[in-house]
Image (cartoon, rainbow, N blue to C red; front, side, top):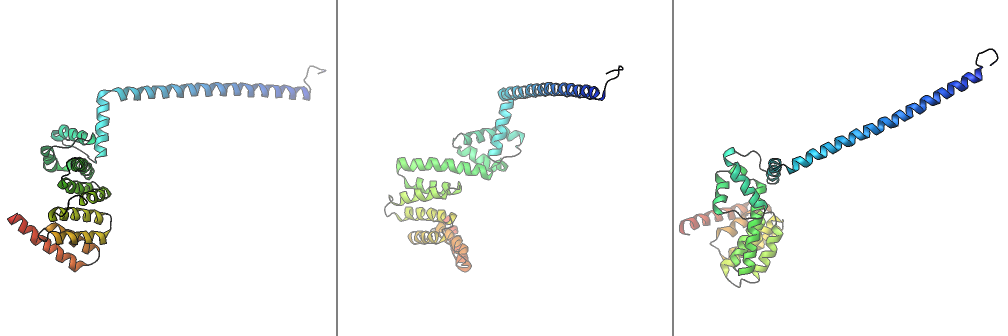
Length: 251
């Protein structure tokens, strides 16, 4: 500079220096802002976590959450206020593996039938099946095996019914009524698994053993229809209906 004025080179150098300073200042500010933003986010996350922890420890909220989860598990929607306490107690009972009393079961099926959902029914059948299977294993009473098989089927576990009836048939001897009952429920499990030819053979065997029992005929009717033989299926259903009426009349 000779006359007090900056040369072009000096002006450019000063401009670049000023630009660098501004960039540095903006960078520092951006880092600071990011740190403050992260700090605020951490604070919000900690506050949310603390809120949820407090909610989790709140007895009333915990009960409400557990009740909602129970209703969802068993497919139970709205419950009438006068039924709520008893229904929820029964749901908890089933959820913890406790069998229902005859009185409670009858009440559910009649007075609170809108809560007797498919999910709850399957869970109840599974409890009954477990209990009757244990009773069969401890007592050797084959009728426990027959009843347990029916419950396993309704619980959606026909394979368990097959294993149970296979073991029971090996121990019951030649008693025709028992063998017929076991063959019928075993045939029903075969039908559940779409093993229709095996179901038909077991139903036929059961009918030969107890020709006056309507149950094997009912199974034969269902299996024939599912195999495509509608006339035979309807004949077996008609026979089952006749035998059922006789059974109701004479026992």
